[in-house]
Amino acid sequence: MEDKRLLKPQKRREFVRNAGRIALLLPIGYYGGALLKATTAEAWVWQIDPYECGQCGRCETHCVLTPSAVKCYHQYQMCGYCDLCGGYLRQGIRNINTGAESQLCPTGAIKRTFIEDPYFEYTIIEELCIGCAKCVKGCADFGNGSLYLQINHDICVNCNECSIARACPPQAIKRVPLSEPYLLKEGYGE
Amino acid sequence: MRRLLLILLVLIMLPAVWCDTLNGQQRFPMPEFESGYEYPEHVPPPSPRGLAMEYIDVVLLVAAMSLAAWFALRRRSRNGIIWLGVFSVIWFGFVREGCVCSIGSLQNVSLALFGTGYTIPLVVLLFFVLPLLFTLAFGRVFCSAVCPLGALQELTSVWPVKVPQRVESALSVIPYLYLALALLFAATGSTFIICRYDPYVGFFRLSAPFSMLIFGFLLLAAGLFIYRPYCRFLCPYGVILNWLSRFSGKHLTITPAECIDCRLCGDACPTNAILPSNSEEKLQERRKGRRLFTLSLALIPILMVAGYFIVGSSYYHLASVNNDVSLAREIRAWQEHQVPATSREAEAFMSSGRTYEDLFTSEARLTGKFRRGSGYVGLFLGLSLGIALLSTSLRERRTEYLPHRGRCVSCARCFEYCPVKAENRKV
Image (cartoon, rainbow over all chains, first blue to last red; front, side):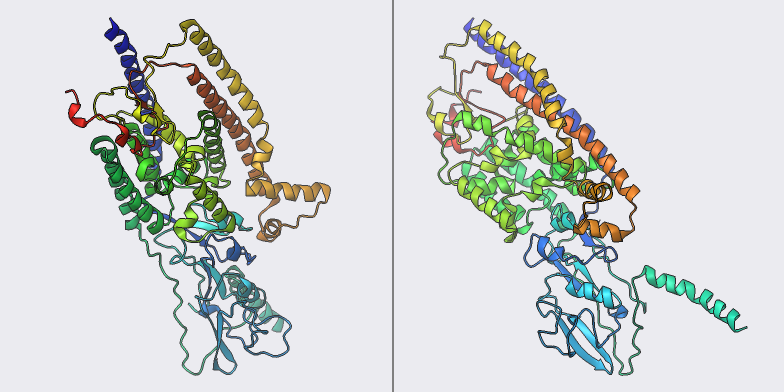
């Protein structure tokens, strides 16, 4: 008698558990299956569309990494190789020179090299670049727009939600396929 | 004649000028070098983690969960769970640097199901679904040693103290709220709050915003004494796993054989997940219990309706989390009340060429989504609260010490408290 009474709720519990398991499997199977059809075998990474970038400077401050995974890149085949470079030199300087007080870049990450009269080459030293976009803005405002920002995927940790994308005013940061992780500018000469 | 030539010239030049404005602005001509200068290479580095690595991670996830299930259910080895936890913290944490984790993936699933313009990668879907299936089969073995966040907390819980049951019950409301809001914000394409407020990912990356680090350190410090504070009082994925685990086919047992009702394991569990035997206890009077049951059953629809109206009426404030909605509100305030729109977002919008109409349609669509969504959030919260109340009125008869399948995270701590040997198992 005692055994029977103890056995009964046990069996009922077992039944409820089995029924519940099936009831829970159904929605997982249904939605999982529906999503499975719409999946992509690719993985997404984040990238800046340089043509939509507004050079606001948030890439430097909003990345979860310090310094930011956003770096400046140079499309040489767009560059005018100007002596008076809007991306290299601060506005309103008296003389064009390579002094720290004349440079726009806060970390001195742009190297200016004389090529031939009157052309100068500007190279980004990536290890020093903090992605502040000051040079990009200078180049876009006064030059050809050959300097632009990209997320360096060697550094980027590929957050599920890029915290710069969330803060980007023109929403210029998008998910792109891992196989083509860069949105590069094309040169005029190509 | 000269005029005709000029017009012809302009007509020829026009496409060229137009092309230039599309590709950016070429203010200065390309230099013509005479010194034989060649343009340097211009290639940013590729991602060091290829697509294959992502699939290897999925294989490792399955392997780790199988191993965890084996350690918890068959081998009954706490050491095994700990070493597997060390592996998970190193691999899924420090090597993989956190993303995409199963907890965060529920937002991707929500965005893919209800949002627009997002195709979910297979890897992310697998990271979401596989732990669910494993939990349905073996209980929360994913939490025990595979989830890097759980494993990190498991390894850092040095002196776990018991949290009073009332405090525990009160605090375990938070994950439901967190889950519901995370789903709502993800479904509307607003933001992924679980990822933004992930306390431990900063450690895995050895870099994080200041606020994230403070939160992480506080939680880690609390975790020395309070067992798994994130899992128990915050984790939104844990809510789903909690409910699936209750219906799991198999689950770890405290005793390897027959429970002898010795009460030794009673205080072993830091999550209050051991339900004591109550065969000696005088059970509640049937009639009283039934009245309490009907009362809380009747309370469920009331709570749901209340939740629907309370949360549903706050949709306006919830919607302001969305970038498009807040921008549209700023622009409207400027148009209608001459409040200057000075934010960077507004500036970017003005210069983007996107029309006002487009922005306001998007705002209307999103606000509608938030209105409906926050109603569902309210219903869900009311229902969860109702079920929680209902379960307090349920008294089940237990003749042995059993783990609470929902709360138990399969940490295997209780095994060593049990004096019964496996050889005593009745066949």
